[in-house]
Image (tube, rainbow, N blue to C red; front, side):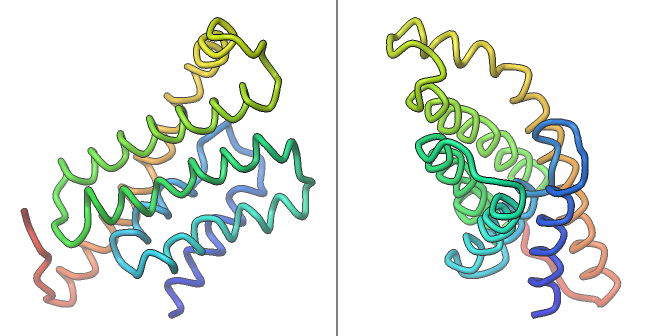
Length: 167
């Protein structure tokens, strides 16, 4: 139970302190949580810190928020579906990549739907193009934190003599 609270606190604190855009532990925590606990708990540990910090620093466009939160829910889902108990570098990397792409597509659709760009196909494409730099930051942040969490878990299990599942 303590490690679940630690994940929650890590996601909340790191989101609150100054950081480069999208380089936060939320995606990596979501992937790790999705692979290690029931999906409802993983969703709570992923969204809870974001909601808490948003309540503290201020909410923004409700339409955009719905899509951002839906995009964040992809992390525990990808953790469950692509990583699960069969931990390999390839599966974790696939989870990180899929999560970053899905978050980019969903959250930026929300930015467009909230009216920040014209309600046309050209407006949607302009929104996605403008957000391209952020997908790189998401990939970097998710890779860093997923690597630390899954790598730390593997080291701990090896130290404790626990066999890890392999694909």
